[in-house]
Image (cartoon, rainbow, N blue to C red; front, side):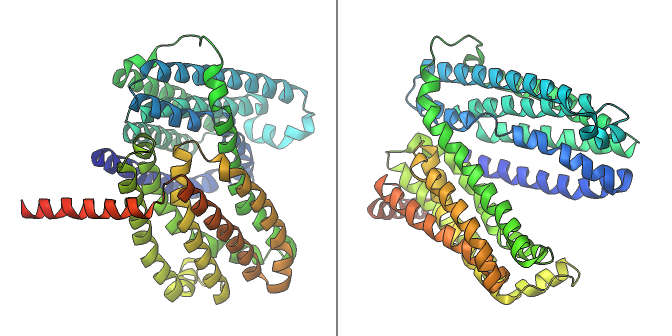
Length: 445
C-alpha cells in the first residue's frame, strides 16, 4: 500500500511539473508567433475542450470509487459491468455532444465566426469540431483512468495520461513555431490525443486484460447506482469555478478592473499550499476507498493530516513574513497589495487545507453528496456577498467572503468526517502508536 501511495505522489508531482512546463512554454511561443489577437482567439476556442471535460457528469469519478470497492471485495464481474456501462454511457454522451455541436455550428451566422475564419483561413467549422473531438477523447481517457485506479495502478495511469498531455502540447507548440496556424494547432491536438487514447487503452488492456472486454451492459443498474454520486461530483467543480471566477467578477464590478490583478495575485500565492497538499490527497484517495471501515483507514487519515500540516506550516510562515516582498519581486514592483489582504487570504489558505484533504476521503467512499450541494450553495452566496464587502473594504472584503466560505466548509466536513468515522480520535491514536511502533522496529533492525 505504501509503495502505491508513494507511486501516486510521484505521479502527481510529475503531473504538476508537466502543467508548469506547458504553462511557461505556451505563453511566449503562442504570443510571439501568433500575436495577441490570434492568441486571444485561440484561448477562447480552447475553452471548448476545457468545458467538455465536465461532460461525463461525474460518472468517471463515481465509477472509479465503486469499481475500486468491488475489486477490493474480489467481485471482478461487478467491476467489469460498471466499467462497461460507464464507458458506453460516456461514449454515447460524447457522440450526442459532437452531433449537437456540429449542428449548432452549421447554423451559426457567419459574423459570429468571422474572427475564427480569419485566423484559420476559412476553416472555422473544422477547427471547432476538431477541438470538440479532442475534448471528447479526454472524456474516454477519464473512464480509462478509472479502470487503472480500480486495479491499483493509479500512478501508472496518471503518468501515461500526463505524458500524453505533455506530448500534445509540445507538438502543437512546435507546429506553431514552424509557422502553423490555429487550424494546424487544433489538428495537432486532435491527432496526438487520438494516438494517446489508443496507447492509454492498450496499456490498460496489457495490465488488466479482463477489464478491457467490450460488451453491451445487460442493464442500466450500474449507471443508476452511481447516478447520485456522479451528480454530486459535478457540484464540486461548479462550486470551485463559482468562487474562483465569480469572486474575481465581483471584485472588478465593485472596485474596478485595477483591483482584480491585486486580488488574483495574492490568491494565486496563497493557493500554492492547497495545490501541493492535493498532490498527496489524491494519491491517498484510491487506497482509502479500499481500506475504508478497516483500521488502515486511520493510518491513511493520519498521514493525510500530518503531510497537509507539514506542507502548510512553512508556506504560511513565508507568506506572512515575506508575502509583500515576494509579490513585489514576482510582479516587478507593479502590484502592491494591502497587508490585510495577505493576512486574510493566508487564513483562507489555512481554512481550506483544514477541510479539503478530509473531503477527498469523503469523495473516495461516494458520500460527497452530503456536502457538495451545500458547498455549491455556499459558494454562490459568498460570491454574492463579495460585492458589498468589496465596496466596504476593498479587496480584503472579497477575501473575507472566501474566508466565510471555507470556515463553513470546515464545520460541515468535520461534522461529516466524525459521523463517517473518518476523523475518529481513538482510531487516530491507535494509528499513531502503530506507525511509531513500526518506526522503532525498523530502527532496531
